[in-house]
Length: 347
Image (cartoon, rainbow, N blue to C red; front, side, top):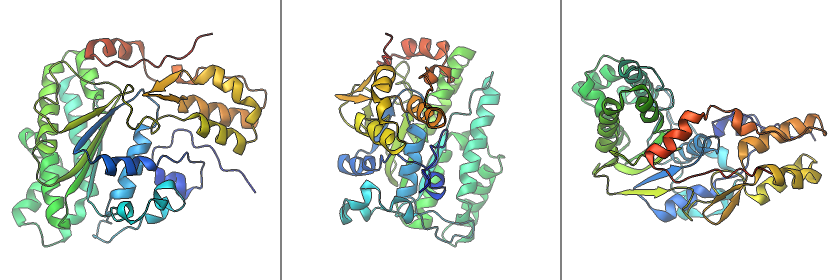
């Protein structure tokens, strides 16, 4: 039987499952989210540790996804055989139950505020477009539909975009008669970029309004998950957000949800017939500890395994250092006060 291909750079669990690619099962993160019952949870992890892929997993599990015509899309098969599927009715009754807003802020890296703002407006408009099926129903008034279209077509006022996510939760909750899940990925990217470009105050004001309106005292919020590399502490955008749970690399909770555990690395190596490479990979890539859990850098592991599958003499390399996490971002770690260090072993 042919081996599954290693998915390098894939960010959507649905595509990985549909294309029958190798997947490291992190679905018990869903169980932990439900058990913890946090209203808003912030995860801070280094770059390339699976934050975006995990958010796609959460979205595909919880979302009552619809076509443009409002017909249900069945994503239940994605989780067949994954760990969450064996956790019982208590957890599976949440599957495909909620409208989900999923927004990534990673594109807001422009040189001035107006360009960065327009990039965020574009992403917000695209998320409205993804939910444009609400325009087909009778649950929304003509006024609501016109406001929805104005946001989606990028012709609304700035004040509307500052509260656009709150507006979308209200309209989705009305259409589905169900509270809404909010997923925000790479929340810190526009703020780090704005700091180095010189428009931090403007960007902070916009992001704070965008977040607080939807995540604080929102009666139709089911729960929210926010991810980023850094914990923004100075002039926090989370000021007044008293329902926020923070899980950094120092936290014991969710410690095995990002990155690969030793067991997961060994299982992957065995699958590809590379078990004899374990000690070499351990020497290079196990220099992380999240909470009490020893963690391997997933970006380095999957790149090495993919290369070693083609060439058994492939020598490990610092793959992670070739990503876009530059020295300027490391400087921002000091500025924003996040207490993480990858701790990659140098021997």
